[in-house]
Length: 70
Image 1 (cartoon, rainbow, N blue to C red):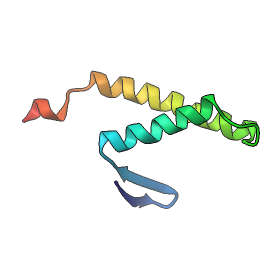
Image 2 (cartoon, rainbow, N blue to C red; image 1 turned 180 degrees about the horizontal axis):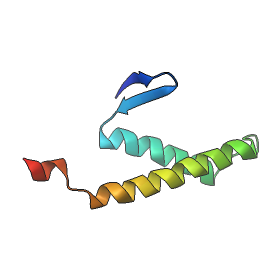
Image 3 (spheres, rainbow, N blue to C red; image 1 turned 60 degrees about the vertical axis):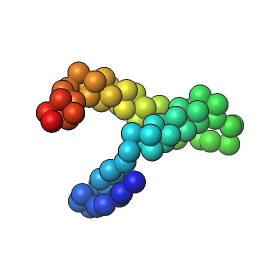
């Protein structure tokens, strides 16, 4: 995985799909099985991020694969 600043307050991440999948799986587990110590606001923000991820993943599935260009 590689992280770099895109601009102030924005980080660009380049990761293998398995690395990103592990992060999303951990986020889903936390959102679904959170301990009571996690604030409700943090869980809501995490759920919103996962909803946006799902929407973007659907969009990506419909886009041509870079492998198709080779």
